[in-house]
Length: 163
Image (cartoon, rainbow, N blue to C red; front, side, top):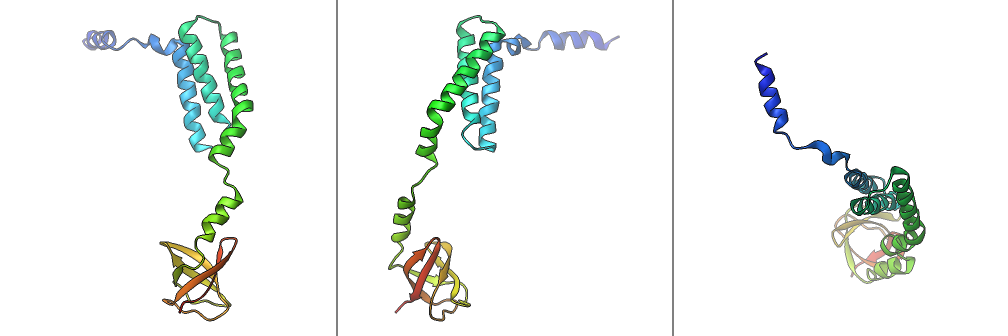
């Protein structure tokens, strides 16, 4: 019996939990969860549903609408964002043209790297700009030999012994 007054004091002094029953807070937390889920499952789809939940949270903050309209706002905002913005954002942030990649690899031509493995059957590994690259060469190359990059074939660099 002695523990009950202490329990009542603790319960009385806890913050009010009514905030978690506010639809705006619920939609905000759902949106936050969806945005965090987008980081784990990238694909630029879940992001728009998270933003749709935040749009719904904002509407719920300023108006008092029932659950059916909340769901409708969520779906409309999410699907409009998905249809109108996904392709643009995906191209903007994730697609790099083959020409950009080719230009970056072309800057390697004429530069020197160091063999980090013996070349067997014309292929081996070189270190260039602190990164290991697959390389091929028509002449024998030993570990530690300096090579010059002459061209590329996809991500394999073609090299010759440096003079």
